[in-house]
Length: 157
Length: 285
Image 1 (cartoon, one colour):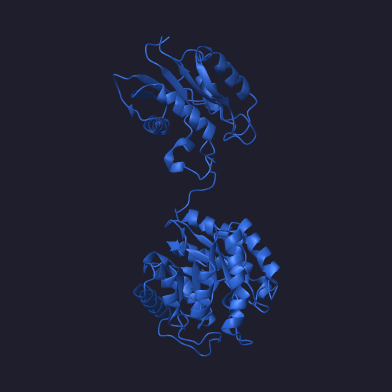
Image 2 (image 1 turned 120 degrees about the vertical axis):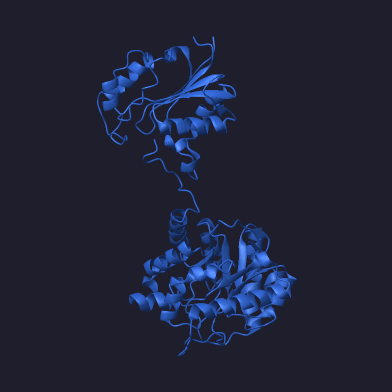
Protein backbone atom coordinates (compact mmCIF):
# COMPACT_ATOMS: atom_id res chain seq x y z
CA UNK A 1 0.00 0.00 0.00
CA UNK A 2 1.01 3.63 -0.28
CA UNK A 3 1.97 6.15 2.35
CA UNK A 4 -0.57 8.63 1.03
CA UNK A 5 -4.17 8.04 0.05
CA UNK A 6 -4.70 7.56 -3.67
CA UNK A 7 -7.91 8.05 -5.63
CA UNK A 8 -8.93 7.13 -9.16
CA UNK A 9 -11.49 9.14 -11.13
CA UNK A 10 -12.38 9.14 -14.86
CA UNK A 11 -11.52 12.16 -17.01
CA UNK A 12 -15.13 12.96 -17.80
CA UNK A 13 -15.42 16.43 -19.34
CA UNK A 14 -19.01 16.74 -18.16
CA UNK A 15 -17.54 17.15 -14.67
CA UNK A 16 -16.09 20.54 -15.68
CA UNK A 17 -18.03 23.64 -14.59
CA UNK A 18 -17.79 25.04 -18.12
CA UNK A 19 -19.90 22.11 -19.34
CA UNK A 20 -22.58 22.34 -16.65
CA UNK A 21 -26.16 21.57 -17.68
CA UNK A 22 -29.36 22.52 -15.91
CA UNK A 23 -29.73 18.85 -14.97
CA UNK A 24 -26.43 17.18 -14.11
CA UNK A 25 -26.07 14.13 -16.38
CA UNK A 26 -23.29 12.77 -14.15
CA UNK A 27 -24.68 13.63 -10.72
CA UNK A 28 -23.90 10.24 -9.18
CA UNK A 29 -20.43 10.10 -10.68
CA UNK A 30 -19.71 13.66 -9.58
CA UNK A 31 -20.74 12.93 -5.98
CA UNK A 32 -18.52 9.85 -5.90
CA UNK A 33 -15.57 11.78 -7.38
CA UNK A 34 -15.92 14.64 -4.91
CA UNK A 35 -16.07 12.28 -1.96
CA UNK A 36 -13.00 10.41 -3.20
CA UNK A 37 -11.06 13.64 -3.77
CA UNK A 38 -12.06 14.98 -0.36
CA UNK A 39 -10.37 11.94 1.19
CA UNK A 40 -7.03 13.03 -0.32
CA UNK A 41 -6.53 15.98 2.03
CA UNK A 42 -5.80 19.60 1.12
CA UNK A 43 -2.76 19.14 -1.18
CA UNK A 44 -3.29 16.84 -4.12
CA UNK A 45 -0.80 15.69 -6.74
CA UNK A 46 -2.43 14.81 -10.05
CA UNK A 47 -1.48 12.05 -12.47
CA UNK A 48 -3.31 12.34 -15.78
CA UNK A 49 -2.53 11.27 -19.34
CA UNK A 50 -3.42 14.58 -20.96
CA UNK A 51 -4.46 18.18 -20.43
CA UNK A 52 -8.20 17.50 -20.28
CA UNK A 53 -7.67 14.95 -17.51
CA UNK A 54 -5.60 17.50 -15.62
CA UNK A 55 -8.40 20.06 -15.99
CA UNK A 56 -10.98 17.59 -14.70
CA UNK A 57 -8.73 16.75 -11.75
CA UNK A 58 -8.11 20.42 -10.96
CA UNK A 59 -11.82 21.16 -11.08
CA UNK A 60 -12.61 18.29 -8.71
CA UNK A 61 -9.82 19.22 -6.29
CA UNK A 62 -10.94 22.83 -6.32
CA UNK A 63 -14.58 21.86 -5.77
CA UNK A 64 -13.49 19.69 -2.83
CA UNK A 65 -11.69 22.68 -1.32
CA UNK A 66 -8.12 21.52 -1.94
CA UNK A 67 -5.33 22.62 -4.25
CA UNK A 68 -3.12 20.86 -6.78
CA UNK A 69 0.57 20.60 -5.85
CA UNK A 70 3.71 19.09 -7.38
CA UNK A 71 5.25 17.97 -4.09
CA UNK A 72 4.49 17.58 -0.38
CA UNK A 73 1.12 16.17 -1.32
CA UNK A 74 -1.38 14.82 1.17
CA UNK A 75 -2.85 12.54 -1.49
CA UNK A 76 -2.60 11.51 -5.15
CA UNK A 77 -5.39 11.76 -7.71
CA UNK A 78 -5.08 9.48 -10.72
CA UNK A 79 -7.23 10.19 -13.77
CA UNK A 80 -8.16 7.38 -16.11
CA UNK A 81 -10.88 5.01 -17.22
CA UNK A 82 -11.66 1.88 -19.13
CA UNK A 83 -12.83 1.46 -22.71
CA UNK A 84 -15.07 3.97 -24.52
CA UNK A 85 -16.31 1.21 -26.85
CA UNK A 86 -18.64 -0.67 -24.57
CA UNK A 87 -21.94 -0.18 -26.44
CA UNK A 88 -23.39 0.70 -29.83
CA UNK A 89 -23.92 4.27 -28.65
CA UNK A 90 -20.54 4.58 -26.96
CA UNK A 91 -18.24 7.36 -28.20
CA UNK A 92 -16.08 4.79 -29.99
CA UNK A 93 -19.00 2.52 -31.02
CA UNK A 94 -19.13 -1.12 -29.89
CA UNK A 95 -16.06 -3.29 -29.78
CA UNK A 96 -16.61 -6.88 -28.67
CA UNK A 97 -13.24 -6.92 -26.89
CA UNK A 98 -14.03 -3.96 -24.64
CA UNK A 99 -15.95 -5.72 -21.90
CA UNK A 100 -13.25 -8.34 -21.34
CA UNK A 101 -10.60 -5.64 -21.41
CA UNK A 102 -12.40 -3.72 -18.68
CA UNK A 103 -13.02 -6.91 -16.70
CA UNK A 104 -9.28 -7.55 -16.73
CA UNK A 105 -8.61 -4.03 -15.48
CA UNK A 106 -11.12 -4.61 -12.72
CA UNK A 107 -8.90 -7.51 -11.57
CA UNK A 108 -5.55 -5.79 -12.00
CA UNK A 109 -4.00 -2.68 -13.51
CA UNK A 110 -0.67 -4.46 -13.96
CA UNK A 111 0.60 -5.27 -17.44
CA UNK A 112 -1.96 -3.29 -19.45
CA UNK A 113 -1.68 -3.82 -23.22
CA UNK A 114 -1.17 -0.20 -24.31
CA UNK A 115 -1.86 -0.92 -27.98
CA UNK A 116 -5.15 -2.63 -27.20
CA UNK A 117 -6.03 0.15 -24.76
CA UNK A 118 -5.53 2.70 -27.55
CA UNK A 119 -7.71 0.67 -29.91
CA UNK A 120 -10.44 0.49 -27.30
CA UNK A 121 -10.23 4.22 -26.46
CA UNK A 122 -9.25 3.43 -22.87
CA UNK A 123 -7.40 6.08 -20.85
CA UNK A 124 -5.01 3.81 -18.99
CA UNK A 125 -1.62 5.53 -19.29
CA UNK A 126 -1.55 6.48 -15.60
CA UNK A 127 -3.21 3.38 -14.18
CA UNK A 128 -0.32 0.90 -14.34
CA UNK A 129 1.09 1.60 -10.88
CA UNK A 130 -2.25 1.42 -9.07
CA UNK A 131 -2.93 -1.46 -6.66
CA UNK A 132 -5.87 -3.67 -7.61
CA UNK A 133 -9.41 -2.39 -7.15
CA UNK A 134 -9.97 -5.26 -4.70
CA UNK A 135 -7.82 -3.34 -2.24
CA UNK A 136 -9.74 -0.07 -2.73
CA UNK A 137 -13.04 1.34 -1.63
CA UNK A 138 -14.83 1.36 -4.98
CA UNK A 139 -17.73 3.82 -4.94
CA UNK A 140 -18.52 3.85 -8.66
CA UNK A 141 -18.16 1.04 -11.20
CA UNK A 142 -20.34 1.52 -14.25
CA UNK A 143 -20.40 2.40 -17.94
CA UNK A 144 -23.47 4.68 -18.18
CA UNK A 145 -22.54 6.18 -21.57
CA UNK A 146 -20.62 3.24 -22.98
CA UNK A 147 -17.43 4.33 -21.20
CA UNK A 148 -16.18 2.31 -18.22
CA UNK A 149 -15.71 4.49 -15.14
CA UNK A 150 -14.32 3.65 -11.75
CA UNK A 151 -14.12 5.85 -8.69
CA UNK A 152 -11.92 4.25 -6.08
CA UNK A 153 -9.91 5.23 -3.03
CA UNK A 154 -6.91 3.46 -1.59
CA UNK A 155 -6.38 4.59 1.97
CA UNK A 156 -2.84 5.19 3.22
CA UNK A 157 -1.21 2.19 4.84
CA UNK B 1 -37.69 42.74 -12.63
CA UNK B 2 -40.63 42.77 -10.27
CA UNK B 3 -44.19 42.20 -11.43
CA UNK B 4 -46.43 42.99 -8.49
CA UNK B 5 -45.68 40.37 -5.86
CA UNK B 6 -43.32 38.37 -8.04
CA UNK B 7 -39.61 38.96 -8.64
CA UNK B 8 -37.57 37.53 -11.51
CA UNK B 9 -33.86 37.36 -12.29
CA UNK B 10 -32.29 39.27 -15.17
CA UNK B 11 -31.55 36.02 -17.02
CA UNK B 12 -35.14 34.77 -17.06
CA UNK B 13 -37.43 34.79 -20.09
CA UNK B 14 -41.09 34.76 -19.16
CA UNK B 15 -44.15 33.37 -20.91
CA UNK B 16 -47.25 35.54 -20.71
CA UNK B 17 -50.20 33.43 -21.81
CA UNK B 18 -53.16 35.20 -23.37
CA UNK B 19 -56.50 34.51 -21.68
CA UNK B 20 -59.39 36.22 -23.41
CA UNK B 21 -62.62 36.95 -21.62
CA UNK B 22 -64.04 38.10 -24.91
CA UNK B 23 -66.53 36.63 -27.39
CA UNK B 24 -64.66 37.88 -30.43
CA UNK B 25 -60.84 37.91 -30.17
CA UNK B 26 -59.11 37.12 -33.43
CA UNK B 27 -57.27 33.93 -32.55
CA UNK B 28 -59.57 31.96 -30.27
CA UNK B 29 -62.81 33.50 -31.54
CA UNK B 30 -64.53 33.36 -28.18
CA UNK B 31 -63.33 29.93 -27.09
CA UNK B 32 -62.74 31.19 -23.54
CA UNK B 33 -65.60 33.68 -23.39
CA UNK B 34 -67.39 31.60 -20.74
CA UNK B 35 -65.78 32.08 -17.35
CA UNK B 36 -65.24 28.38 -16.77
CA UNK B 37 -63.61 28.00 -20.19
CA UNK B 38 -61.31 30.92 -19.39
CA UNK B 39 -60.50 29.37 -16.04
CA UNK B 40 -59.70 26.05 -17.75
CA UNK B 41 -57.40 27.97 -20.09
CA UNK B 42 -55.59 29.41 -17.05
CA UNK B 43 -55.16 25.91 -15.61
CA UNK B 44 -53.82 24.71 -18.94
CA UNK B 45 -51.21 27.44 -19.34
CA UNK B 46 -50.14 27.13 -15.71
CA UNK B 47 -49.55 23.43 -16.32
CA UNK B 48 -47.54 24.39 -19.40
CA UNK B 49 -45.29 26.56 -17.27
CA UNK B 50 -46.47 30.08 -18.07
CA UNK B 51 -45.33 32.56 -15.44
CA UNK B 52 -47.91 35.19 -16.40
CA UNK B 53 -51.51 35.20 -17.60
CA UNK B 54 -52.72 38.24 -19.49
CA UNK B 55 -56.45 38.53 -19.00
CA UNK B 56 -58.30 40.71 -21.46
CA UNK B 57 -61.92 41.79 -21.55
CA UNK B 58 -61.89 43.71 -24.83
CA UNK B 59 -60.55 42.58 -28.16
CA UNK B 60 -57.96 44.86 -29.68
CA UNK B 61 -59.61 45.21 -33.07
CA UNK B 62 -62.54 47.56 -33.69
CA UNK B 63 -65.95 46.23 -32.72
CA UNK B 64 -68.85 46.66 -30.38
CA UNK B 65 -68.11 49.33 -27.80
CA UNK B 66 -67.53 47.83 -24.37
CA UNK B 67 -68.13 50.15 -21.42
CA UNK B 68 -65.79 50.25 -18.45
CA UNK B 69 -68.56 48.66 -16.38
CA UNK B 70 -68.91 45.80 -18.84
CA UNK B 71 -65.12 45.37 -19.03
CA UNK B 72 -64.97 45.16 -15.23
CA UNK B 73 -67.79 42.61 -15.22
CA UNK B 74 -65.71 40.46 -17.54
CA UNK B 75 -62.40 40.59 -15.71
CA UNK B 76 -62.50 41.73 -12.06
CA UNK B 77 -64.12 38.70 -10.41
CA UNK B 78 -62.16 36.45 -12.73
CA UNK B 79 -58.90 38.01 -11.58
CA UNK B 80 -59.90 37.41 -7.97
CA UNK B 81 -60.69 33.77 -8.72
CA UNK B 82 -57.36 33.22 -10.47
CA UNK B 83 -55.51 35.01 -7.68
CA UNK B 84 -57.06 32.76 -5.06
CA UNK B 85 -56.38 29.55 -6.98
CA UNK B 86 -52.89 30.37 -8.28
CA UNK B 87 -51.09 32.60 -5.79
CA UNK B 88 -47.73 31.96 -7.52
CA UNK B 89 -48.99 33.15 -10.90
CA UNK B 90 -48.42 36.69 -12.17
CA UNK B 91 -51.75 38.17 -13.17
CA UNK B 92 -51.69 40.74 -15.91
CA UNK B 93 -54.75 42.53 -17.19
CA UNK B 94 -54.88 43.87 -20.72
CA UNK B 95 -56.62 47.22 -20.32
CA UNK B 96 -56.02 50.86 -21.11
CA UNK B 97 -58.62 52.21 -18.65
CA UNK B 98 -57.50 53.48 -15.24
CA UNK B 99 -60.89 52.68 -13.76
CA UNK B 100 -60.61 49.06 -14.81
CA UNK B 101 -56.96 48.97 -13.77
CA UNK B 102 -57.83 50.06 -10.23
CA UNK B 103 -60.56 47.46 -9.93
CA UNK B 104 -58.37 44.58 -11.10
CA UNK B 105 -55.46 45.65 -8.89
CA UNK B 106 -57.88 45.67 -5.99
CA UNK B 107 -58.79 42.08 -6.97
CA UNK B 108 -55.14 41.01 -7.07
CA UNK B 109 -53.66 41.89 -10.47
CA UNK B 110 -49.88 42.32 -10.54
CA UNK B 111 -49.39 43.91 -13.93
CA UNK B 112 -51.31 46.34 -16.11
CA UNK B 113 -50.69 45.64 -19.79
CA UNK B 114 -51.62 48.86 -21.49
CA UNK B 115 -51.64 47.85 -25.12
CA UNK B 116 -52.71 51.33 -26.16
CA UNK B 117 -49.71 53.33 -25.14
CA UNK B 118 -51.02 55.44 -22.29
CA UNK B 119 -54.30 56.54 -23.86
CA UNK B 120 -55.66 56.99 -20.34
CA UNK B 121 -53.10 59.18 -18.55
CA UNK B 122 -54.25 58.05 -15.11
CA UNK B 123 -53.34 54.41 -15.61
CA UNK B 124 -49.79 55.05 -14.36
CA UNK B 125 -51.21 56.53 -11.16
CA UNK B 126 -53.20 53.37 -10.58
CA UNK B 127 -50.11 51.21 -11.10
CA UNK B 128 -48.20 53.39 -8.64
CA UNK B 129 -50.99 53.33 -6.09
CA UNK B 130 -51.17 49.52 -6.08
CA UNK B 131 -47.40 48.96 -6.56
CA UNK B 132 -48.29 47.10 -9.74
CA UNK B 133 -46.10 46.75 -12.81
CA UNK B 134 -46.98 48.37 -16.11
CA UNK B 135 -46.31 47.63 -19.78
CA UNK B 136 -45.60 50.76 -21.80
CA UNK B 137 -46.42 50.19 -25.45
CA UNK B 138 -45.85 52.10 -28.67
CA UNK B 139 -48.89 52.68 -30.83
CA UNK B 140 -47.83 55.68 -32.84
CA UNK B 141 -50.46 57.72 -31.08
CA UNK B 142 -53.50 55.92 -32.43
CA UNK B 143 -56.81 55.79 -30.61
CA UNK B 144 -57.55 52.51 -28.81
CA UNK B 145 -59.18 49.83 -30.93
CA UNK B 146 -58.36 51.40 -34.27
CA UNK B 147 -56.41 49.87 -37.10
CA UNK B 148 -53.38 51.60 -38.61
CA UNK B 149 -54.27 53.54 -41.71
CA UNK B 150 -51.51 55.06 -43.82
CA UNK B 151 -49.29 55.61 -40.81
CA UNK B 152 -45.68 56.28 -41.66
CA UNK B 153 -42.62 56.97 -39.58
CA UNK B 154 -39.28 58.56 -40.36
CA UNK B 155 -37.87 55.74 -38.23
CA UNK B 156 -40.33 53.36 -36.63
CA UNK B 157 -37.82 52.01 -34.12
CA UNK B 158 -36.73 55.48 -33.05
CA UNK B 159 -40.41 56.35 -32.58
CA UNK B 160 -41.03 53.17 -30.59
CA UNK B 161 -38.05 53.86 -28.35
CA UNK B 162 -38.90 57.53 -27.86
CA UNK B 163 -42.54 56.87 -27.01
CA UNK B 164 -42.09 53.82 -24.79
CA UNK B 165 -39.19 55.32 -22.88
CA UNK B 166 -41.15 58.56 -22.41
CA UNK B 167 -44.08 56.50 -21.16
CA UNK B 168 -41.76 54.55 -18.86
CA UNK B 169 -40.39 57.78 -17.44
CA UNK B 170 -43.90 59.10 -16.95
CA UNK B 171 -44.70 55.92 -15.01
CA UNK B 172 -41.55 56.38 -12.97
CA UNK B 173 -42.48 59.99 -12.20
CA UNK B 174 -45.94 58.85 -11.15
CA UNK B 175 -44.35 56.54 -8.60
CA UNK B 176 -44.26 53.15 -10.34
CA UNK B 177 -41.20 51.20 -9.18
CA UNK B 178 -38.34 51.27 -11.68
CA UNK B 179 -38.05 47.48 -11.64
CA UNK B 180 -41.77 47.20 -12.46
CA UNK B 181 -41.77 49.00 -15.80
CA UNK B 182 -41.67 47.07 -19.08
CA UNK B 183 -41.66 48.42 -22.64
CA UNK B 184 -43.31 46.87 -25.71
CA UNK B 185 -42.89 47.96 -29.34
CA UNK B 186 -46.41 46.62 -29.97
CA UNK B 187 -46.20 44.79 -33.24
CA UNK B 188 -49.13 45.58 -35.57
CA UNK B 189 -50.37 48.39 -33.29
CA UNK B 190 -50.08 51.60 -35.29
CA UNK B 191 -47.82 49.69 -37.65
CA UNK B 192 -48.02 48.09 -41.05
CA UNK B 193 -46.27 44.81 -41.74
CA UNK B 194 -43.08 46.52 -42.88
CA UNK B 195 -42.95 48.42 -39.61
CA UNK B 196 -43.44 45.28 -37.53
CA UNK B 197 -40.74 43.45 -39.48
CA UNK B 198 -38.33 46.33 -38.93
CA UNK B 199 -39.13 46.50 -35.22
CA UNK B 200 -38.42 42.77 -35.03
CA UNK B 201 -35.17 43.09 -36.96
CA UNK B 202 -33.99 45.98 -34.79
CA UNK B 203 -35.38 44.84 -31.44
CA UNK B 204 -31.89 44.94 -29.96
CA UNK B 205 -32.09 48.73 -30.05
CA UNK B 206 -35.09 48.62 -27.72
CA UNK B 207 -33.35 46.14 -25.43
CA UNK B 208 -30.37 48.50 -25.32
CA UNK B 209 -32.53 51.13 -23.58
CA UNK B 210 -32.17 49.00 -20.46
CA UNK B 211 -35.91 48.67 -19.90
CA UNK B 212 -37.08 45.04 -20.05
CA UNK B 213 -38.83 44.41 -23.38
CA UNK B 214 -42.08 42.54 -23.90
CA UNK B 215 -43.00 41.29 -27.36
CA UNK B 216 -46.47 40.39 -28.51
CA UNK B 217 -46.06 38.56 -31.80
CA UNK B 218 -48.42 35.68 -31.49
CA UNK B 219 -50.23 34.84 -34.72
CA UNK B 220 -50.44 38.49 -35.68
CA UNK B 221 -51.23 39.93 -39.10
CA UNK B 222 -47.63 40.90 -39.84
CA UNK B 223 -46.81 37.18 -39.70
CA UNK B 224 -49.86 36.33 -41.79
CA UNK B 225 -49.13 38.96 -44.44
CA UNK B 226 -45.47 38.04 -44.60
CA UNK B 227 -46.17 34.38 -45.24
CA UNK B 228 -49.61 34.55 -46.81
CA UNK B 229 -51.20 32.51 -44.02
CA UNK B 230 -54.50 32.72 -42.18
CA UNK B 231 -54.79 33.08 -38.43
CA UNK B 232 -54.69 29.37 -37.64
CA UNK B 233 -51.55 28.80 -39.73
CA UNK B 234 -49.11 31.29 -38.25
CA UNK B 235 -47.35 29.34 -35.52
CA UNK B 236 -44.09 28.71 -37.38
CA UNK B 237 -43.87 32.31 -38.52
CA UNK B 238 -44.60 33.45 -34.99
CA UNK B 239 -41.83 31.24 -33.65
CA UNK B 240 -39.34 32.55 -36.22
CA UNK B 241 -40.11 36.12 -35.14
CA UNK B 242 -39.96 34.99 -31.52
CA UNK B 243 -36.48 33.56 -32.05
CA UNK B 244 -35.21 36.82 -33.52
CA UNK B 245 -36.60 38.76 -30.56
CA UNK B 246 -35.19 36.23 -28.12
CA UNK B 247 -31.71 36.54 -29.58
CA UNK B 248 -32.01 40.31 -29.15
CA UNK B 249 -32.93 39.74 -25.50
CA UNK B 250 -36.70 40.27 -25.17
CA UNK B 251 -37.75 39.24 -21.67
CA UNK B 252 -41.51 38.62 -21.86
CA UNK B 253 -43.41 36.80 -24.63
CA UNK B 254 -47.15 37.34 -24.88
CA UNK B 255 -48.39 34.16 -26.50
CA UNK B 256 -51.22 31.87 -27.43
CA UNK B 257 -48.97 28.78 -27.66
CA UNK B 258 -46.95 28.51 -24.44
CA UNK B 259 -45.17 25.19 -25.02
CA UNK B 260 -43.93 25.97 -28.53
CA UNK B 261 -42.81 29.46 -27.61
CA UNK B 262 -41.03 28.30 -24.48
CA UNK B 263 -39.14 25.70 -26.50
CA UNK B 264 -38.07 28.28 -29.06
CA UNK B 265 -37.02 30.84 -26.48
CA UNK B 266 -35.15 28.25 -24.38
CA UNK B 267 -33.24 27.15 -27.47
CA UNK B 268 -32.31 30.70 -28.42
CA UNK B 269 -31.52 31.58 -24.81
CA UNK B 270 -29.02 28.70 -24.77
CA UNK B 271 -27.55 29.71 -28.12
CA UNK B 272 -27.10 33.19 -26.68
CA UNK B 273 -25.27 31.69 -23.71
CA UNK B 274 -27.91 32.82 -21.19
CA UNK B 275 -29.15 29.34 -20.32
CA UNK B 276 -27.17 26.09 -19.99
CA UNK B 277 -28.41 23.11 -21.99
CA UNK B 278 -30.87 20.99 -20.07
CA UNK B 279 -28.67 17.91 -20.10
CA UNK B 280 -25.55 17.72 -22.28
CA UNK B 281 -23.36 14.62 -22.32
CA UNK B 282 -22.62 14.05 -26.02
CA UNK B 283 -18.86 14.16 -26.51
CA UNK B 284 -18.34 14.87 -22.82
CA UNK B 285 -18.47 11.30 -21.51
